[in-house]
Structures are given as structure tokens and as C-alpha cells.
Length: 119
Length: 113
Image (cartoon, rainbow over all chains, first blue to last red; front, side, top):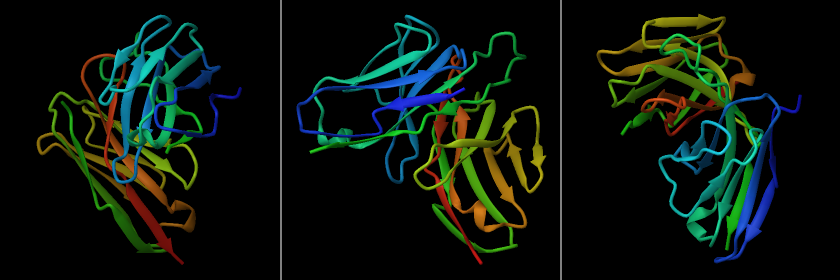
């Protein structure tokens, strides 16, 4: 199993350009997440999805859109990139907590990351 | 919403000594607290986690303690080795459903030979 994969690994954009980051997982996980990682700020949740066809906002959703048309894929889009979106983007996935005792969480598995620079 | 503070931001210890990283959280409803290790240029990976109904959990040289009353939890690494050098992140569960996490700012741990 490949686990969680992300494409591309690196990308440089000019301000105002658009792009889509692709996350794929082959673990049949229900939940998927997009985070951004900036120096000194840890990982911050951008958007997440609890299943195919559903998406929801996280802590820092502005400037991003997402789609989950297939269970195994979660796309992150930047419609008009800004220098403030220069970051490392991580996708993650996990099993749902359904059928687990209350308070039992399943591990989030992370992808290798995409380093995005916006000039 | 949930806020997680992590200290220290950098930590340097001699090989064989112990390292302790501390986190505090703000939402008393948080009930799950994982710790992730991220090596340079790599993805974060879960190393240990604890639920709110447990005060301490150990896994070989790694242990996590939780004080729900004070809303803080800590990672303890004993007998540190060079391969323990990495950035460590604590996290706390956020809100209801979807197993959402709020992460601390990270601690860069360096083990000196």
C-alpha cells in the first residue's frame, strides 16, 4: 500500500495564479484533511472531509477550496494565489470514529507534503 | 475554539539524558491528545497518544502524562538517542466529530552526542 500520497511535491506560483493539490489514499479511510505548516506555527487545519461528497471548513479556510468527489481523493484548490499562501501543505487521512467507544480516536496518517512558493 | 501552547520551542539535551516537552490546551471538552514526530523534510508520524480517561501512558522510552484539571500534558523521552532528534508536535482534539486536531507550535529537539 502506498498510504497517503500527494502531488506535486514542489510548486512555484506567481501571485494570482491558480493551482490544485491532489491527495490520494489507498487505506479506505473515511476522513481526510488538509493542513498547512508554517515555521513556528505548527500544523493548521484548512479544510476537512468526513466522506465522499462532503467538505467542511477548518481553522484557516480563507483563500482555499476543496472537493472530495471520490473517497480516495481530496483536492485542495487555490483560485488566486497570494504570497501569504507560501507554505508546506500536508494531507492526512484517518478511519472514522464510528463503532469506537466515545473518546477513541483513530490515527491520522500524513502524506509527504507539498512545498508551495508564491512569488 | 481550542488553543494549544507548546514549550519549549527548542530543546537540546545530551545523549542518554531525558527530555520533557509540555503543552497546555484551552478547551476542557478536548479528550484526545496525540504526539507527532517530524524528522527533517519528512511527514509527521504519530508516536504516542493519550485519552482523557487516562493519566499516563508509556511505550518503551516514551511516556505521556495528562492533567485534565490543569489542562496540560507532557511528553517524556528517557535515555535519549541521536535518532530522537526531530521536531515534536502535541495536539488536542477540537470540537465534535471528524476527529479534528489543533496542533501546538512544535519543539525542535536536538540530541548531542
